[in-house]
Every structure is written in structure tokens, then in C-alpha cells.
Length: 493
Image 1 (tube, rainbow, N blue to C red):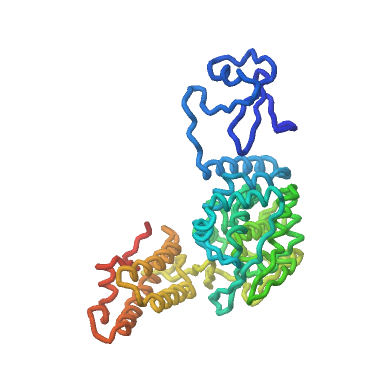
Image 2: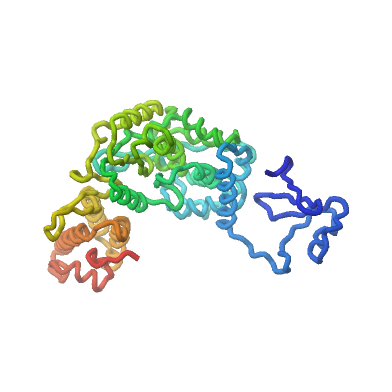
């Protein structure tokens, strides 16, 4: 541990100060008889602090990029949090406003290409009007003077697969950058506490890895599955309980205050601004997935706890954000009752209509857009094999996306039309192509037949005159001449 004042004693009584935003600085104190050699002698000639910009071999140190400096800083936080599970981090606010942290937060936010918030400003507007450096300087000043207040969150709705609407909150770009800077600083701390069975919105985790884990569990005999569904999880996370969990790892009151501001930010909807309701974190916010994982980590730990209600029965969990399943050889009613009681104490609710217990050997179940089922052997042998395929809803969703794209982009030329359609097809097929795990070829064949029919109708209606594209060969021509992806020939790169 570093002693009070940020200094730690090294050999020959030299003092080295560690600063997260600066290079290592050597400080002279008294007569350093042991500081021999060309480079140390030059470093200690003056009473003032001298920066060591070269290594001991005299070669200049390569300058780190902002991304590299952020990674180094996050690695240090993660190691400390992993080594000391009870440590509370108390000086973090100044790290949020470090220049390289804000620059990296801006770069990552810009790469997401999100829509403007209530102020209507895009990244292009900011760079044209003030420039990114001046924009970040203004953010840094607000954080230093503690005058920052988030703008109202713009509420929009997007359709869900079941026909209902999902609310999304769109913060302004300034709020997004500050949220991402805060996330950069605090995420490694909580990553050290998260369980391996959580796969959503985490570094080096993905839906594909969750599917692989489910396949492993099924092959190990955990075929009894609780397919759980939480009712409006993001909208019902209680603020007080969430802040208690955050406070167990972070004692910096200024960082806690920032999180409180975002949780209680006003909502702008239908031309009116209303205050927050004391629970929930808006989907669409940069920091919302991390906060959601912090709260649901309670369930992960309960399932894995030695001597708990789940461990004696070999129950395991696979979770992606608020979607999770419990798997075991046999799920006892006591374990399910304990889960419901725990969620009630967390002020969360299971959707009883969608939550069900499935024997995977006899009945299929869906998770993250995949269907898991044991199908009959293709050669008529007396055995079944596990098939993991895109679900019927997933296939219908890509059809709807293709239909909407064709309607909206009918004015484009063939080359641009094929390029835009490729982006939709490639993303969907990449998601469902998990080598050695999923079987998407049947779904890809169905998608190809849909493209044949949709493109035939499209080009017949586009022009009153018949042309070579107004027949069943439109797909083949676009594939051969314009580079359109043929789903049946696609290989994930």
C-alpha cells in the first residue's frame, strides 16, 4: 500500500511519486549516495522535480496513446479490487476528469454514432461549432468546479418483438461523454466482483459465449431449465438499494453524486419535462448496463454461494443483462421459491406468464434469439442430438428489417442498394453463426428464399417497364454483379 501523501519508499531512500495522469517523477531528498550512473545523476542534479522521459538504456520512451493509458489505469484498478475484496475506493472523481480519460470517452462515444439528445446537437455540430478540444475543456471545468448538471433524457420508443414498445432514454452528447468517463473509471472495480456466468455488456463477454455455456451445461446433463423473465427490469431497479451496493466498493462521495444525478435526471417526452420517479435506470444511457449488472450480480452470487439454496442441487445460472436461465439436472421447488423470494426482496418481479420450467430433452426453449431443442436423428437412428438454431422470432425480425429497408431505399442505385442490404444481412448472420455450436444453414436458406421473393416484387413495382431485374433472377444478378451477400454461401469472416 502507498503511504499517506502518495509516496512510497524505494532503495537508497529515494522517494518516487506516482501520479495517474503524469509520468513517474523523481524527487531529490538529501544526499543520494546510491544514485550513481549517468541518468540518475542528471535526474537528481536539481532540487526541483525532473521527469524521467528515457529508460535506463537512454532510449526515449514511446508515447502512449489515450487508449493505452486508459487500459493501464484500468488494469491497476482491477488488480487492486481483485486482491482486496473489501477495499473501498475513495479518490476517483479526479480521475474522471483527466484529459486522456475524457478524450478516450469522447472517442468511444463518437464511434457509437448515437442520435442527438434534447439539445439536438450531434458530434458533427460540436466539432464544427467549438471543436472537440474546447468541448472537453468545458466539461473538465464543470467537473472541477462541481457545477455539472445533466440535461433531461430524451424518451423515445422502439417496437419489441411481441408488438409492445420499449422505452429508450437518449442523453445529450455531453452527458454521454461524462457517463463514459465515469464508466471507464469504475467499471474495472466491479468487473473484479462479477461472476463468470454474466455475459451481457461486459468486456470480453458476448451473447455467443453465453450460448456456448448453455450448450456445455446441456451436454453435462443439466437439462431442466428455468426460463426466467423479469418484468420491466431496467424501469424498476430501486435507487436506494443500488446505491448501497455501489457504496460497498466506492466511497468517493463525488462519484456517488454523479451517479445519483443520472439516476434522477428529468425525462423529456411529448414536449414536456418531468422529474424522475425514484427507481429505474433508462435503457440507452451509457452507464445503465453497468448499473444493471451491479444489481443483478446479487442473483449471480446467490446461485454460486457455497452452502446456499442452489449449490447443493448443482444449479447454475447463465445471465445476459436482465435475461437469465437456471439449469440443473433437477430443479427443486425450494430453489425456485428461494429465487422468487429473493427477487421480491430486491423489489423485482418475475413475469409469471413468460417464466416457465422446461425439460430440454422433451421441449424446446429460446434464449437470446436462439432455439435450443433435441431433434431426431437425420439418419433414423434411435437417438437425438442438440440443435441450436435462430428462433422463429429472429427469422421473422430479419424479414421485417429487409422489407422495411427495401421500402425506404427504393430510390438507390443497385450498387448502393446492395451495400446497405449487406450491412443488415451480415450483422444478423454473424450473430447466429457460432462455429461448432449453432446450426443456422436452414434459417439462411429460408432467408434466401425470402430475398428472392421480396426482390422480385420490389423490382416489378419499381418500374412499369419489364427489365432483367423484374424476374426471379434479381437476387442472382445483384449477387454476381453488385456484391450482394447470398445467405446460403456466406462464411463468417
